[in-house]
View (cartoon, rainbow, N blue to C red):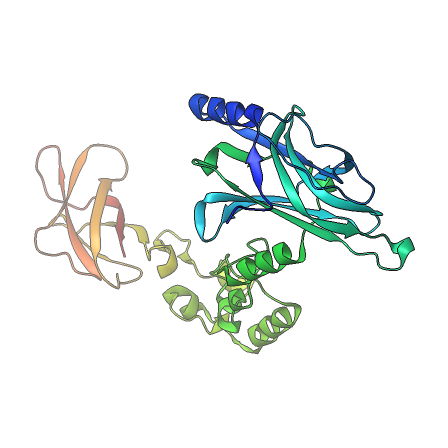
Length: 332
């Protein structure tokens, strides 16, 4: 059966379509014109490929949407909404125009009256046109989005698609991204948010914690206590004297540096007892002669322990005697 109502590409439309496909460009459809066929009562039209305009225009507006048909990827669907304040005419024809004002598609439409509010029956009219195009990617919609109206069907479809997206609002935080009380206390996660109540809970829980002592600071293993500036200062243990040390807490590596001085016995030996025994190991000790003259200070083999070491001193003639010695050691 012959189609009584249809749309066709005009000769200009077909030429522009072919040219766009050959050059890899887009054919930009921008507006639609609605007409009455040249009669106030709506006259039937016979659109032809050679037409360059519709018979008589009653309204021109923006095309609201252009998309592929869900059931046929060679069909393009254009949608237009005629506002409710526009009307008092019949619709029997339509034309789709590109941005240069050329008629690309012309069609015959079922005779439909478009009323206005003044007539007591104002309503928006939804015009849907289906085009068959071999390459639908060649045709695109080009309109000013500020003057486009959306059909109810279009809005419902967009809302449906939106609701099915996994994260439709990336600019907003999600409820599951709220930091837990423990994460707030630990302060280790910058990717989550904290609420005002969470801040109060964090501060309350924080000040319920016990105060850390110097041993807690030294070990650096207890996250359930809080630390004060004075305790943090004394996390480094010192004995600043002729024989002394500087001991850093474990969270700073636990390094222990010690120093001292003394005089060797007549056999040249000086037993150095460290002011603080090394908890783990003494890596190295260095001695030097104190005063005039030259002497060599050596660590006596197999005497090093975590608490002491024997140093032996020789003068330049290889003699063993009482010599003043300074020393420094390092370990942890």
